[in-house]
Image (cartoon, rainbow, N blue to C red; front, side, top):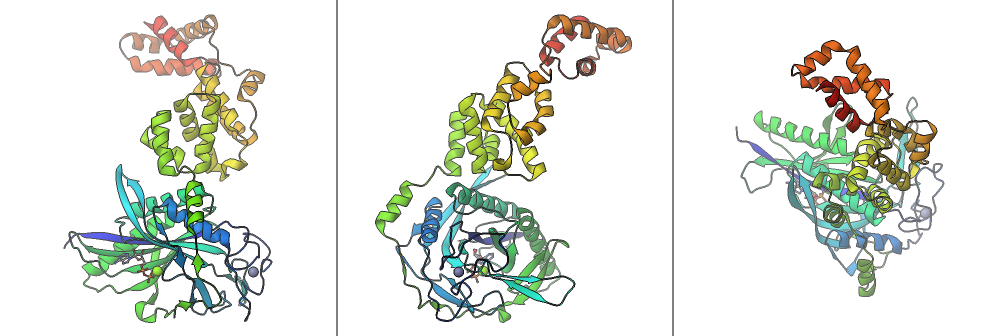
Length: 476
Ligand code: ADP
Ligand code: MG
Ligand code: ZN
C-alpha cells in the first residue's frame, strides 16, 4: 500500500458589500421580504440592459492588490449558460478570459510552518437567486433578492495539502476581505462560501490525481470535515481497487459524508461567450494607483507590527489580528492603558469566550475599549484580582460601563489590608490543624488549600500575593 498525499484547490465565493447589485440599482442586502429587491435587469427580463457597478470593480481590484495579483486593465464579462429556476436569465454573468485579477498568493501558517499558496485568478460574477423548498408541501418558491448580487470568485492553485491548510487559507482570505471592508464574511448567511477540489496521489508523485469537486461549503468546520472525509473516501476507493472518476459531490453535514451529484460526463457545457450587453471592464492606471495607495494595513503587516511594537507572542498576535474589529479594539484599549499583555490576556480569555458564547459581534457588545483598559488597570493596581475581573466580565460585556465604579459600588475591592488578612490567615491555620501540620512536614502543595480557605472567608477579595506571603509566614 503506497501512502498518499492530498492535493486541494479552493474556489472561494465572496459577496461584495456594495450598496447596489452588480448590474442594476436594486439594493444589495440580506434579509428583505422575498422578491423585494428585484427589477427587470436582475430578474432577467428580455431586453433589459445591465450596467456594471463600478464599486464592485473597485472592490475586486482591491482584493487582487491585497493578495499580490496583477490587476488587468482590460477584462471582459461572459455569459455562462445553464438552466436553473433561480437563474431567470438562463445565464450567469461571469468572467472567463481575461479575468480582472491573476497570479496572486496568500501566505498561511499551519503548525508553526509558513507556506505560500498561489492564487490563480479572481473574477467577478453575479449571484443567482434562491429556490425555497417548503417542507410539508409540494410547492417550491423562488426568491430573486440575491440574484445579481456582486460576487468575486477567488481560485487557488492546487497548492494545499491538508484540510488544515485549506481552512487556514480560507480564514486568511476572510480576514483580508474584512480588513478591506468589501465583504461581511458571514458564512452562515452565505456571504462567503467555497468549493473544494480534492484529489490524492502517491507520496512523492509529481502527477496530480483525479479530482472531485465538493460544492458550496458554508462553514470552516464543514470545509475541514468535508475534505477530511473526501480524502479518506478516495483512499478507501483505491485500497479496494476501484478507480476514481472526476465528479461533483455534495457534503451532507448531518451525516458527515460527501455524496455524488454529477460526473464529468454529465457536467454542464456552459457555452461561455462574451456578454454582448456589457462593454469590457477597463480600469485605468490612475484609479489603480489610488486604490493601491488607499490599501489599509493588512493582517500580515499588522501581525508583524503587533509582535514588534506591542511585544505580543506569535499566538497572541494570531488571535488578535485575525479579525479586524478585535485588532482595532485591542489598539484602542492599549491607547488608554499600556499593558499589552494584560489586555491581550483579558481579550483572549474573557472577551473571546463571551463573544463565542453569545454569538454577538464586538460591535453589539456593551464593553468598550475604555472599559477594557480600565479593567486591566484596576487589576494591575491591585484593586481587584483576576478572579474578580473574570466574575464581573459577563456583566461588563453585556452592559458596558466603568469596571472601577462597579467594583466600588459593590464593595468588591480587593482586601490588601494586611491586618485584616492576617486575621483570616490565622483563623484558617487554626481551623485546619491537620493540614497545617502536614504542610509543615513538607506537603507544600497544601498552600493552595489554605489560599482557597482564605478566598472563601473573604469572598474572593483577598489580594492573592499578600495571602501567599502571609500564609508562608504563618505556616513556615
Ligand atoms: P473548473 O472551472 O472546472 O472547476 P479549474 O481548472 O478552474 O476547473 O480548477 C478549479 C480548482 O481545482 C482550482 O482551485 C484548482 O487549483 C483545483 N484543481 C485542479 N486540479 C486539481 C487536482 N488534481 N486536485 C485538486 N485540485 C485541483
Ligand atoms: Mg470549479
Ligand atoms: Zn435589479
